[in-house]
Length: 342
Image (cartoon, rainbow, N blue to C red; front, side, top):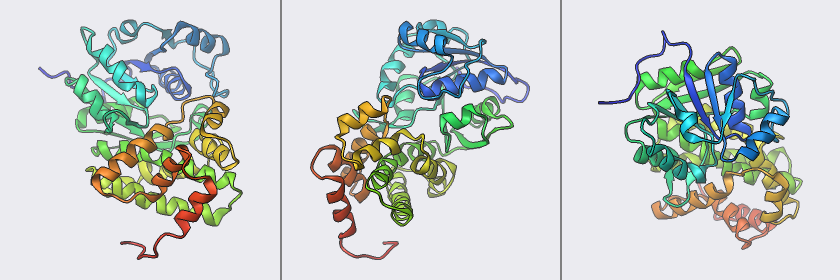
């Protein structure tokens, strides 16, 4: 018997567990609680949750005031008890470990929503596939798009996409998240929505490097355009739909992550462009920079498939110390001349 849900129109509120108490997880928890949902926010340590409760917001989102209605817990079973859905907002490389813990529970959630943005480095698989393997009875949805946490916390108008292969689950997630300041579209290309959100972080690191080197609008505009072509090639080779990458989860998310002063991936790249080592740049950010493991996973997968990803290759070579940022720019700019759409 399937645990998959029925449509949401007559169920305006739900019990939802948000897994991950960092910037995005805490922001999601606050947003869902404000809508009247019963929200439990899980974090891996009571110490981290204690700091969150004391401050009322995670370090990266000072604009957030976590509603008192949000219950916090370091016990996964307590967070999931009676929950209709679990929202994954943990770092991408922790998803499989959390899945294994969820699979051991008596009643895994009927819907799992992937809000993390990355690719599993160990298996080179999208996070939705990792989750489906461990939780085969759960409907897996992805929510992604241009959604910088600090802007969502300020109720600045934002639009995202909810994708799920189960139309009823997609509709429920859409209704759970949607508000007058957070518009949610829905579709069924789970892979495209997920890959758009993951791969844009690699290009955002490159955009930050451009900023750190002191380049201007010409450079960044070209980088975003060629980066989008690169994302599209790889995503489509993996089975995504091209139109998805041209939408909110692809182009939309790429734009905000490459231009926002709050984007961790862009800021990380900017530190690299200014001459800091990857280790120093990560310490400067102080939070997870998903583009780092995603760049390695994406480039490895692209090589396996024979898909050219020159910007991604350049980012990985910089991370590995093979090229300086200036050398990477020279290599990209002096590649063999070619047709634009070849």
